[in-house]
Image (tube, rainbow, N blue to C red; front, side, top):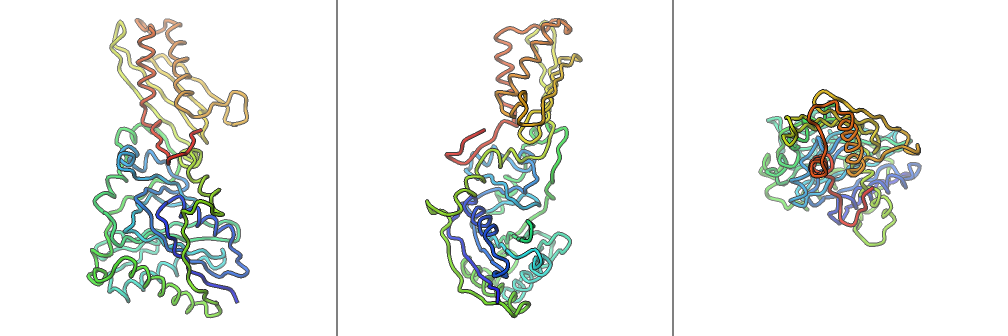
Amino acid sequence: MRTLKVTRLIGNSIYSNLAFETWVHKKMNIEKEFMHILLWRNSPAVVIGHHQNPWMECNLERMDRHGVTLARRASGGGTVFHDEGNLNISILTSRQNHNPNFNTNLIASILKREFSAPIVANMKRWDLLSSSGDKLSGSAFRINGDKAFHHFTLLIDSDLKTVSSYLRPNADTQSSFTAANGVESTRSSVTNLKRETPAVLQHKLCDVEAILEQELVKGSVEKNSEVNVLPSSTVYTMSANTPWKEEERALKEFAWIYGKTPVFEYQQTKQWNGFDSSTNITIDFKVRKQLLIWLKVTVNAVENESSFPSNPKAQKAIQFQRDNVCEECVRALQSIASGKQVEGFHLTDEMLLQMKEWIDNFHIFFTPLPNNTMRM
């Protein structure tokens, strides 16, 4: 008889909790384990989907000022905001038993029965909505070989005033992307369970969590009676020495958080008045898998364009880093200036310094990382 287990994660680090989820998923023995349910909460964090562009999904500058963490998860879907008023539920199963429809309907029925919540299940996206159409819960999935998981948020008592400010990207940054692959989030108005149903106001958050745990197990067992329910357990995910430290380290790396961004093209334009005549300079570049693969600098109508290897092992491959982009831009500008194709365009040391400062401050190079994390 296979087992059903519930684990409550004690610890509010998004990286530790996602790492534990990943580790459990890897280690899960589907011959012996029918289902493993995780319940967890985080300190304020913005979590983007596996195939998303962080600069286009959230306001990194505001997040950095307020100490809000950015994380990329392994599952797909859109960007979500976590805080300690949001409950995350992960349901890990075999691929064969992966059933988002059942999970979504089960959560909706529990909320209706236990809290008289006016919940509507949107089965096209596996969301839970209020009667007025505001979002209470969103889902994401991952299927890897013969295993799968379905995890979702449940806004019980989150700080809704801050959600939109973090999930609204800087307008200048967003308009700078001339092309971008990947998944774009569907923007939705959100609400809290406490706002929608008075019954929840009578409970502490931990009580709501306990009721959900009990009813999730009960509902899953009713559908699959030949299951041995193990005693629930708690795990402190932020301990110094844990088996999932390697997964946590990987989640914090630049290569994962920013380097996994799908291919994009970026553009910046500036009018310079320090030359003999007004001069427009435009910089365009394309990035794929952390590599700069194409760059074009245009001074008025004169272009200097370069392509670079897309194979990271190639001798002339260029890592997408601030200094590398700046160096290539300066080289292109010097080439245009030496060709004397633009009237009045000549580069002094002072002007080059100003241009480097301009390039250094491109929004695309603003990439805050967790403390003690090394950049590429």
